[in-house]
Each structure stands twice: as C-alpha cells, then as structure tokens.
Image (tube, rainbow, N blue to C red):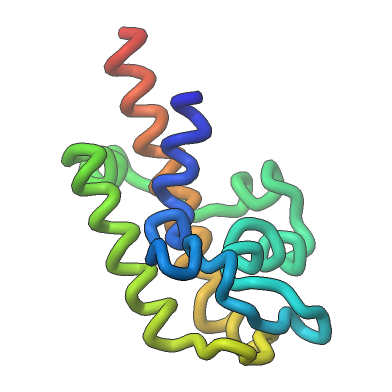
Length: 132
C-alpha cells in the first residue's frame, strides 16, 4: 500500500481538483482517441513513449547523492505541495476537449519523468527509514 500511495502522490492528477475527480471528468483527446486527463497522465503518455517502466527507469538521468538527498527531504505534505504545483500548471495549460499529442508530450513528458523519479527516490528514502 505504501508503494501505491507514494506513487499516487507523485501522479499530479491525484492531487488535482475534486470537482473533476482528479482529471477523470476532464475530457480530452489523446491523438485521435477520446480519453480523460487523468488517464493521459496515468498511462497514455508513458505507453506512447514506447518504453517499459524498467526501460524508462534505466534511461533516467543519474542523480548525485546530494540531488537524491534534496529530493527526499521534507514531509509527505511537502511532496503533495510539490505535485500541486505541477497540477496547477497542467490545468492552466490544458483545455477540456483539447486534442493532445506530440506537442503535449514535448511540453510535459520531462515533467512526468521527473515526477516518476521523485516518487522513486522518496519511496526508497521512506523504506530505508522505516526498514532501517
């Protein structure tokens, strides 16, 4: 459960607005297909990238010890606020009904990768703290 919760904390739409159920009621198009914004961030951008999760992880930039320590610092509340900054940008730059695709990937895929990396670093730090 901890792994799932930490992952969800870093998927920005999980910290979205309740009125649209975290992007589930925010209808968009992903290339030609109808979908919702939550699903775009949960799976469709990663699937479109064409790498498995492990391939993606292997191709992430290496972080220094200092960078990992900085990312892992703070509380779960700080991590939530970090995701809220991202989700505010997403909502400010995405319109209901918008056709998302290559440009959206260009604008946001590095953000998505950064969120995945932060989630991994923070989960590792938390597990090390709990399990010693």
